[in-house]
Image 1: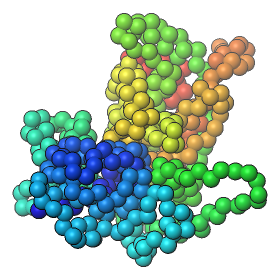
Image 2 (image 1 turned 180 degrees about the horizontal axis):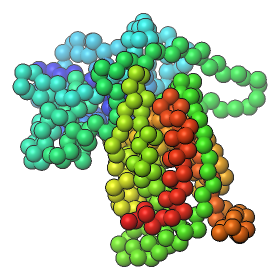
Image 3 (image 1 turned 120 degrees about the horizontal axis):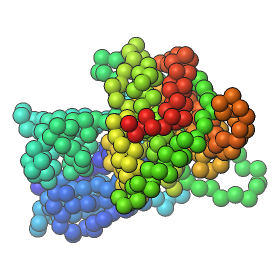
Image 4 (image 1 turned 90 degrees about the horizontal axis):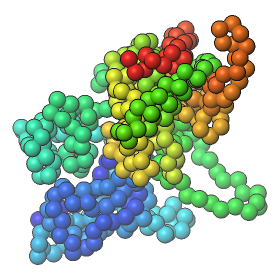
Amino acid sequence: MAINIQMPALSPTMEEGTLSKWLVKEGDTVTSGDLLAEIETDKATMEFEAVDEGVIGKILIPEGTDNVKVGAVIAVLVEDGESVPADAGAATQAAPKADAPAQKMEAASAPKPEPEVAKAAPAASPASASGDRVKASPLARRIAADKGIDLAGISGTGPNGRVVKADLDGATPAKAAAATQAAPSAPASAPAPASAPAPAPVVAQDFGIPHEAEKLSNIRKTIARRLTESKQQVPHIYLTVDVQLDKLLKLRADLNSALTGQGVKLSVNDLLIKALAKALIAVPKCNVQFAGDQLLKFSRADISVAVSIPAGLITPIVVDAGSKSVSAISTEMKDLGSRAKEGKLQPHEYQGGTASISNMGMMGIKQFEAVINPPQAMIMAIGAGEKRPYVVDDALAIATVMSATGSFDHRAIDGADGAELMKVFKELVESPLALVA
């Protein structure tokens, strides 16, 4: 029997994506877990795996096609020797080809737009079951059985909520649910925020100046949308402190000398991630999320770290950074940063976090105010460390000083609480032995 392969929802906010590359061709035999295609989502470029066995009978959406809706049939899988039904993929909405002119793309058949409230982004939900049967690919079932993972606690990102191999990466019997639910969300009882009026479309202004029009990636579109919403909907308050770095830099040098044999080299940012996490635990009123008529208070600090990638910006998460050693944070960040640049992060590795840190000091930026990454309630912006005249022990001296600016969601965090967080962060950085205690 022919099986329709549908465009998957590879992230909770994904509504459509770009079918970047097919990794199979018509006539290829595939088994559960084989990679079928590379798909660019609103967050990253990810690999899509087969959940059934069979032969690729027909590819309906060519590679390079943009704006393929989640749920659209992109290919048909048939049994060996079976022909492709004449009506295969008839239910899918035809998507414009990647090389079609813009005018033809606009004229392509498309469903009528739904009211704004009906466009809620599909979210990964716990694996749905039929009776007592959890929907999961055969490969995912084998992995779960080998590792002793309860599939009922896993959120499936495959077609129709099916659990696939990627959903089990990093899951353990004790932490299976947590690994796939890293993104904090408001309880089901919390009312959905009112939809903001749709902004007027931005129209290009061509004044005859020579230029080249570069098409936006899905990631860049998402960055533009989310940051616009953040500045429009989240009341930001900014608090800045100057922080002396000399003791931190000496501690870093001593630790790197001691860790040489382990192949670990700490960055200043690794220590600042640890400092922010410990500060959030010490000032729990800042480790929160605004959720309509509720305030979510987190018991651990998961730090999202801004990483620049060719497509824009992504924020991989150091989970429970406050309880990890700085060497573990360093090793984890090198892995996350490398895979972020390759577009190989899994959704649970960049969705969630309780607060963010963005360091532009290595680019020579002295001080800046970062935009909050919703639904988080704060982000720390780190400037460059530089030699400045500074009062040390009531005497004027030359010290290495950086400016750190916290951006806070004023709906959730009062100015006094934000100031307390900045004070604790400054104390931890200026007396850094507490970071390794």
